[in-house]
Length: 255
Ligand code: ATP
Image (cartoon, rainbow, N blue to C red; front, top):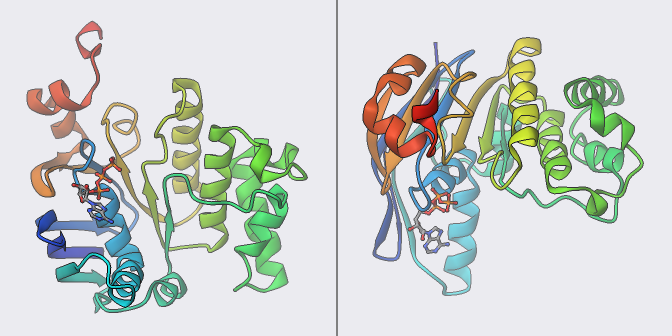
């Protein structure tokens, strides 16, 4: 069953094209990766799916800033949500965890998590908290730590935890591994897999490199300059020499 379908999406910042007639789809229960280099359009894509792009466009319009134009459509569970504001999309079950999500640095870990459960009942918050702590046991040991004093990797765990508190049906992870050590990356990848196994969340995840994602994704898209470059199952991505060369990092030959 198709959960998300982005059709012919085109996004301009002024006259510069960031996304160019891109179509992607995500089926229920899949983990789908979007792989692409810097500036490929990954963040623009995720912001468009979550609706944040509409907010940014409105702000820019109001202050007479850059002109953002969006064409094409975003369909979620067979509903056209292209013009729906981000808060409405969250209520429908779409949550975005942005790269370097701003957390409340002066508040502790648990306060940060509880703030994002504000739409839920007390009982649900309790349940969601245990899901987050089960996924990231480290956060439990740090629950009274000020978020601003945590390492980059720990903050990324908290950022994903915050998105999980909304109990989304579709979890969007924008470059969750960026700038983290291989060891922390491995922990996060394991946690994402655990989320998939223990909840019924469907996951769309962007990354610059394919290698850490391959073990956990079902399918992936490669995008370059905002355009579709390659798409296929994890095996097709893995076996494609161009994809391996460009997106597996330097040491892929050593395997
Ligand atoms: P990165 O991995 O570096 O975050 P990305 O794949 O997420 O890159 P985007 O951030 O979506 O790519 O950027 C796509 C293109 O749109 C780039 O050329 C970028 O310079 C441009 N762009 C993004 N945001 C803006 C903005 N607010 N104003 C103008 N141009 C922008």
